[in-house]
Length: 490
Image 1: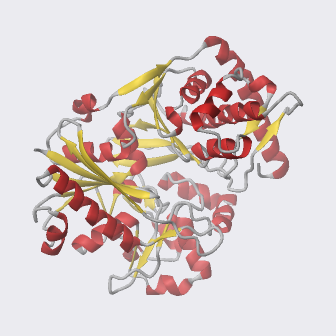
Image 2: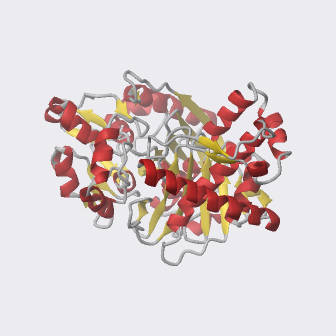
Image 3: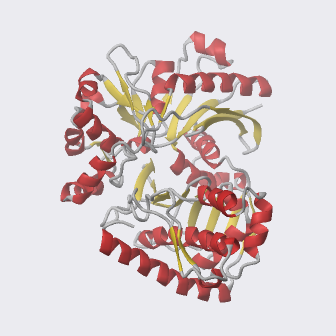
């Protein structure tokens, strides 16, 4: 049985899959681990626990399939940071994208011209999520860590160092650090200097097709892998989610609606927004993924479910929200319950309702919140429309919240585009398998794998609903702008 073994290192768990060369999932293991919050706004994980989960998961998948894979490949969450000492031991836990301790440093950097200059080189918006801002925090608060550190790496870099003894980072994850010149594909000296470190303290950047071999025997015994099994370094989860959706050019948008949300599209060159509102991350030399991440998605529905409907089952809540007409009978929501990255890049943003009347009940509020999530994503799309040659014809969507027909219909109506629900929830892992196929020379072009992608439940835009949402969106935009002008925040 010929198959690939993609490993998707996520925020709450790591997924290890066996994917056949025809794109069929043969086996899957999901290993979860906790996030630690030792201080307010801190989010950390134990990197050694993640290594253990990966080794155990590989062993379980190989045992299920019965034969070793053609190759192992990686997808990984972005923006993590680990300080390693000169003996190869971790000085810190893995500091996650959601860690907000460097919010003051990010706000200060964003308030001046230097932040936009760095963004225009790196393609990473200035935000507390980025390793650049985390390093500035260390420089100002724990400078002794910088002095003791031999190399700053991400969580996948930690795994690879444990397995192969090398400090490496792929171009895709490097392009999400705020330290990497995305067009030149090398560390950007002004950003590195601002972080208070040297380039020698950063891992070696390599292409996403880069392979490692000669797995030490002890790991072969633990996993069931052969010593010469190629390990393809892979890319970031966001870029690979687009590959797994085959949304690789300006004709398709990929939307992910899990706990949070994201909207992305591909281009042959980096797209650098003049105001730094969108990201542009490397996938390979001919492909960049551009878009914006939202803090708000399924977590807003969870609030609706618990706070407005006392924990009522999801399908019953959606039934009640579907009964409310488009426009929520005049009620408008600001959906930023969890602060916001794109489109606001303001962690202090808060949610709210406008136009609340006595006739409005929980169902109106819930419907308005779902509509606001769609309008929030559309605002990011408006920022992406400046990409050269973009001509979006469809949306490909996945994630837990995307399984709701109501949510898909609202998005179709707000965007005035057909929405296709992607089958399966492992888009990033599928993308990692696709990348491995190309790295191994089994394909020359990703579109040879079009048959791997399947969609269902097409939602077409409804003209009458579009007109309602155009009016609501104008109000949504006006209110957002006014609040930012008056208060400097939302």
